[in-house]
Structure formats: C-alpha cells, structure tokens
Image: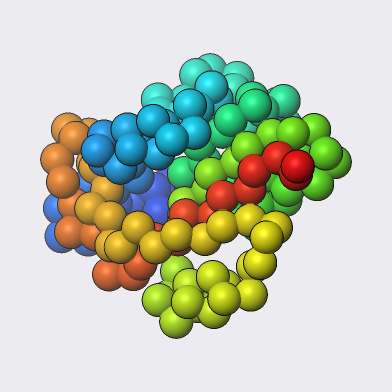
Length: 154
C-alpha cells in the first residue's frame, strides 16, 4: 500500500494534519524513567532506515505507525511492531521496550489485570499527539493510550 493510499497518511479530515508525534512532556517523563537509547520509529525517518529489521537498542521507545504499510512486499501494521518488540525481550537479550498504542479502556483494564509479572501496562489517557507538519496539538484519538512495558527478566 502506497502512503497516498493509506488513510493514516492522508491526515485528519478536518485539517489534513497527522497526529503521530509524542508530546514532549509524555516522552520526557518516560525517558527520565527508562533512559531510552533507541527509537525504531523516528521522525523524520532517515533515508534507508527500517525499524522492523534493524537491531534495536537496550532501552527502546516505540510509537509505531497506527496504520498499515507495505514492508518487504507484505502489508504490515501494529502486529509487526509487537513481534519485533517481543523478539529481543523473549530471547533474553535484556532489552527494555516501551510501546504506546491506542486501545479501548476496558481492554486496557483487562490487560493490566492479567499481564502479571511479565510486563506492565499503563494508561496514559487520551494523548494529544503533535502534528508532524507544525507541532500543533491534535484532538487526541478519543481512546486511551496503552503504554506496554517489557523489561529485562531478572
């Protein structure tokens, strides 16, 4: 799917902007806690960079695209980013992954109850993402943002 055909690349119907960037106060608070050394979904995206195939850092902040893209000839969406996040963590490589994604509040509550000691799920509320074009504050998604935290096993 070409970016022009992906509804998430078109922008908001009201103003045509994209609300993908994490607000600095949200990122800074998480960075203070986890000392991120890698962002597999950077903006702007450097030429040739591929966060789904490169090696991630030891402490990773992941704000993945909310839609699907064509990657290596296949349509891939949020599931691909979760698989990649689990890859380093499950293999015992000692990587920390903090991944944010919109989710219904009831699902967030259920996940928090069942995730146990394997990880942590926080509710960040309805984040007002920043427009890539000018940094202006968006309306939010209308959904709560889950912050999934996978830390190295002890």
